[in-house]
Structure formats: structure tokens, C-alpha cells
Image (cartoon, rainbow, N blue to C red; front, top):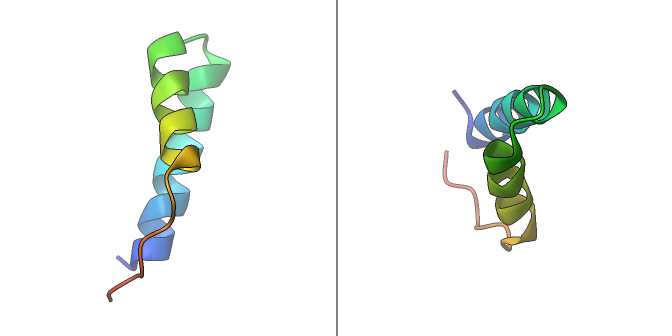
Length: 42
């Protein structure tokens, strides 16, 4: 799986959990968003 696809998949997963009221997971998703994006190596 390409790195970009994996990122998208994890974000979707995080959004789905956050929608269910899982605050810990929401915090984790926010933390990922704040981190600068690394150069992607395929």
C-alpha cells in the first residue's frame, strides 16, 4: 500500500472512531495532523 493511501486510511479510521466519541483516538488524529509531513518513500 502506498504511503499516501495508508495515511488516508488511518485518517478515515480516526475520523470514524472520533464520530463514535472516542476522545483518545481523536487526540491521536489531531497529533498526526500537526506533525510535519515526512518525504514519502515508496
